[in-house]
Length: 310
Image (cartoon, rainbow, N blue to C red; front, side, top):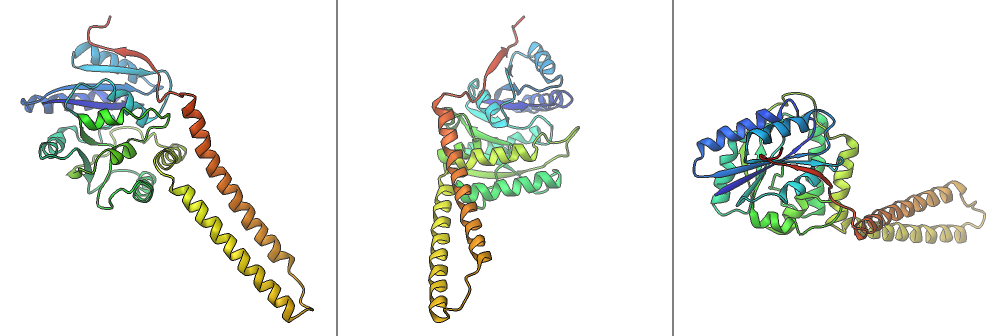
């Protein structure tokens, strides 16, 4: 069986060679498998591309992909998927936190018949901010994408080739790998692995990037936000109708009663805020539809780096 490793690379000039070496050492022990490594440079501002060029020059089973601009982790994965030739695809991080030397645990579960296997960590070595982001992402995928509550999703996973081929059929400008996996198969499981501390630096996921990732998830694969907006609007309208009846009854019972301007303004602010929220949500969906209809690319590849390139 041939295993294809796909690694999105960003600010990893100091860690990438270590990760690749760990993969090579592990696969040398697993002689029943052949392998290849796809390294996707997502327009990293440091020397990551130079490291990829050096690795490709020394190893004929490593392919480098250089993006023309930063498209994000999920777009980098999709770019890597288009170059794989293995029977199983394994995705992992470039910072050394995902243990490449435990890939056999994922592959064993694939051999048992599962289509996708996600690594699960008992003790995550992330910052509090990243752990909070992971918790929000977990709740979002459960609510919006119907992810089973017992399933843990992470950036370290293995998938059979037919799942990856199905994911590549998605041509939208905003890929969300978790959503693509969940819509492709139900045969998914977890396997426990260790989670390491970062070797150097810190996570490249800022709050802005996390918000953009969550927005991709629920606008690309769910209409639940629109339904929630509709239900919320109906509820507010019902409350407003009931309140109007109460005001009329009070006025009939006590004609001298003064109508309150503060309550009127409060109702107007609530309704106005709700309307703007719903319009913004609808605009987000329409905007993404417009971008997709204009064939905005998931990624743009500047160059492909191979062993025999000069």
